Image 1 (cartoon, protein in one colour):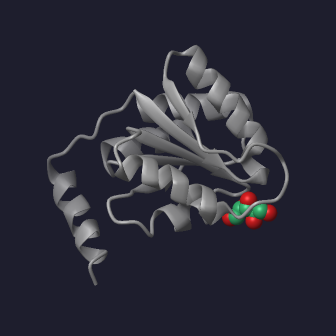
Image 2: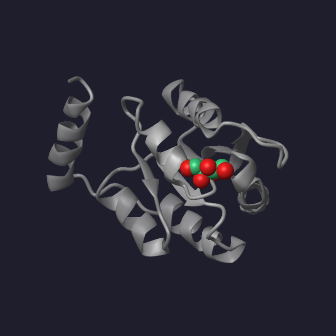
Image 3: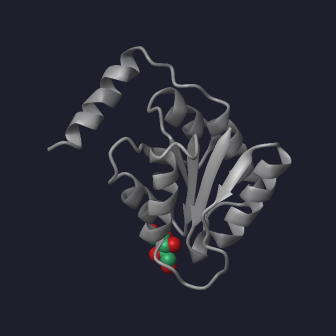
Amino acid sequence: MRIAIGCDHAGFRLKEAIKAYLVSKGFKVLDEGTYSEEAVDYPDLAKKVVRDIKENQADFGILICGTGIGMSISANRVKGIRAALCLFPEMAKLARAHNDANVLVLPGRFLGAELAQWIVDAFLSTKFEGGRHSNRIEKIERMMEN
Ligand code: RB5
């Protein structure tokens, strides 16, 4: 499985920890930066990760900023992207099972590496349930057209 990962300066440390974790588990990781704690604008990094998914260079994305809110707002501007800000493994599981989320968003300022790894595990190991949830996803996609 191919994972594109991106962060701003506030998510840099957690991004490095998650990247190392994913590599150790055998995932192919596409690191879109940022590569230091020097200040950058989170929409620029969201754009890169979202592009990787849209262009089929990655199966899922992970985005990290300070709160996770800026990355969520940015990524969800793009058609076909369903970015979910998750604080607990159960939220990540449901984001995949019910919302077919294709981007996991994490708050770098409010999450330790260990809990973040559990959230990532839950996200990447859960499949979309389809069924009644498919209709809801289609309705979300139609909202993008207006
Ligand atoms: C950067 O200071 C901060 O605004 C950003 O990381 C994020 O929390 C925005 O939503």
